[in-house]
Length: 160
Image (tube, rainbow, N blue to C red; front, top):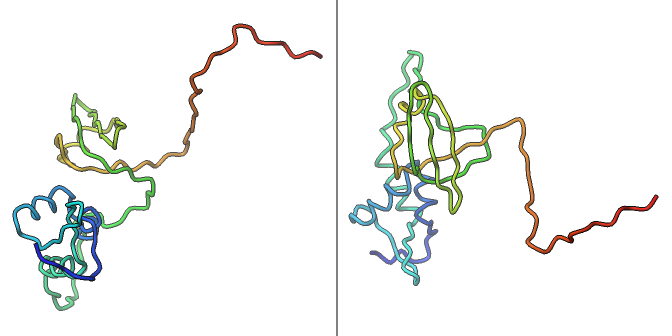
């Protein structure tokens, strides 16, 4: 590990997001020694912004001269308008006929989504993969659970 001094340091998760790759992929590259990092006093890896820029420059193809042909879409989504994003990992994927089910673990919570089997096949999700749940709904309900305490056996009726 190198001492990267006072340069801007990013967490591994922030660096992975900036690079457009999965957190687990970046961690593997660190453990394989492919990426220069520094460790905090607590043993956490940090990446300098210059290291992230170096890796991005290596991945970015050189600029091709503009041609008069129309640009074709690659099908790769680079931005999405949904703002309610929950990051987690795939706990289970089941496909049965037309529909499939994905169970995503987000912290200590589980989110289950039912989607078409075509969409699941296209996503190629497998157990343990990192994934995002993007919530877009016309209705959102919020509830609050009652605190545990004794409920009186008899309630008083309001006098009129």
